[in-house]
Length: 278
Image (cartoon, rainbow, N blue to C red; front, top):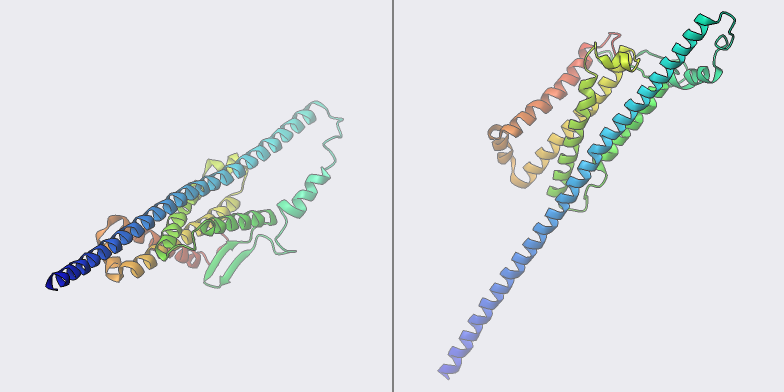
């Protein structure tokens, strides 16, 4: 009888041990599957980020190519017209205006956004100056470019994944797009930029695009920083946020850059209020 009781007790202990081992194996397997899934999601997110960052460069390069081709065409027509007029006093071909080009300039290239308001200041208040109103063509380009950046910030994000993965993807995406948009921002930053002459643009037009590229960079930089802040505080706590902010140079300088960009954008609008500079 005692032997049977010892056998039963041993079987119970063995069953408990096997159950514990099975649960541990199942936990390890689920953790391994979760890690593999997260790794695959991160790889896909990196590939998409690289694709979108190339798209932004392609868009900017294509617009520059179109403007350069337009500039070459206009300069070529002017040069041919000059040579023709210098050698032929009786020519009448260039005397009459080109109506299609005049119509294009009137209704698209140089037209105001609405009906009459044109090249005037746009102020949110007496203390906040947003610069000059763009022309209709400039407005359409800016709207399309802003919409492209907004779409690139949210598309192909794995919104069905855990909060940490979503925050990491948003942080990486907005950070990459902010850095990419800094390239045209810096190219348009100087008053005596050679691109002004090469592209036959006025300084006001050049500075208009510079300002809007800067606003895009500020917006994406703030989203990048806030995504890191919210994800780190929720997952690891505010103590970890403070620790990384003061102890990790990359995070510290990230905060410095993001705060400086936001302050610079706000202060510049206030300081430039009431001026005619775009």
